[in-house]
Picture 1 (cartoon, rainbow over the protein chains, first blue to last red):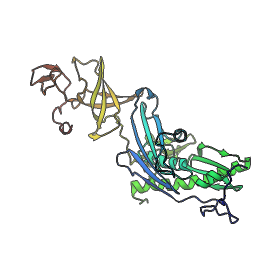
Picture 2 (picture 1 turned 135 degrees about the vertical axis):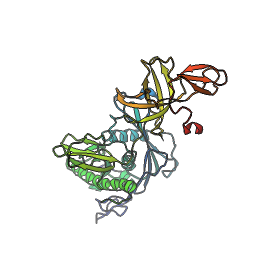
Picture 3 (picture 1 turned 90 degrees about the vertical axis):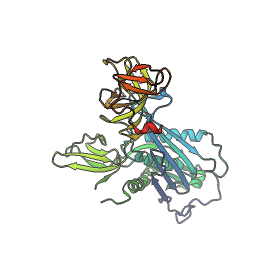
Picture 4 (picture 1 turned 90 degrees about the horizontal axis):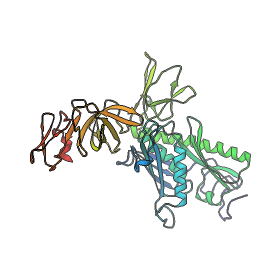
Length: 244
Length: 182
């Protein structure tokens, strides 16, 4: 059911995936906060082979002025893949996929960000994908959340994101590029771990009811692990890691 | 030192009270932090607050801001804020300052550099006052010839064309270092 035909063995008999991970194992994640001097908040994430840089500006004056909301601030998000981020040169003009991901990330962050305190202002998030592998939207969402906290924007909770999926009839955590292309299903989930609320859920593929429930549980477990890494990145920046 | 991140539980509403801007009630009776900072608990008053590490560059009540006048209408001036408490900000947020009830014909003109005291937020707008002695015009030029001006009683006088004009002059007129940089 689902998935393209391939010679790649996505999951072997010992439940080891094509990149050597177990089914419930995340890729290697490194997050750094405050990497850009000229942005109000910034972060850099390495999520497996994904390398993403995020800059946050604001709250600042809205241009064009007619977009300003007198009751609340607004959030704008731009997800952009660099021409050198993929195997073949990518046209730097915004594609349909980039426009969709910009919208999805913005809507995933909106429940977390408290913009009521800043009417008539805008918070701009610029996401630059330097190197893309599968799951760049989740990686970008994780980095954007850290960058917003770094900028001091009031938030209800950090948003952590992780994908779960189905390959070779098994539910796996953190789908990579090969599993995304040749697997049976891919489900990115955005989650606020302290409030226990889901802010993003998408599903590409077909899952049964039980598989769907398992997929969500697995993704949420992944989000909770990523949350600890996000928190550590922020503490390392502001307190140089020494907490008592 | 109690380090908290956005969303971290601080206390429950029965135990402590918080009127701090850096906390919120999650509607389940739990007070949570909205920012990264340190938790400060006052056991005597049963209050708590979060001392934020990363401050955003928007002015608060009683802050002194310096900006450029971008628009003058009949009873108010609109100022684009450049400095908050002498710290440069790049948010270019605008505030309004009422000039109603003043006896001067002209409080400030467009492109004047002006100091104001923030009164607060109302109806989604930052309101500021020019009545403070330190508040008022810090730098201006002659309306007629764009020449340098000197202060006279209740206004300014151009040293080139001797044109005189009304202004609400700040006590610090001509003494601010940042004008030399611009």
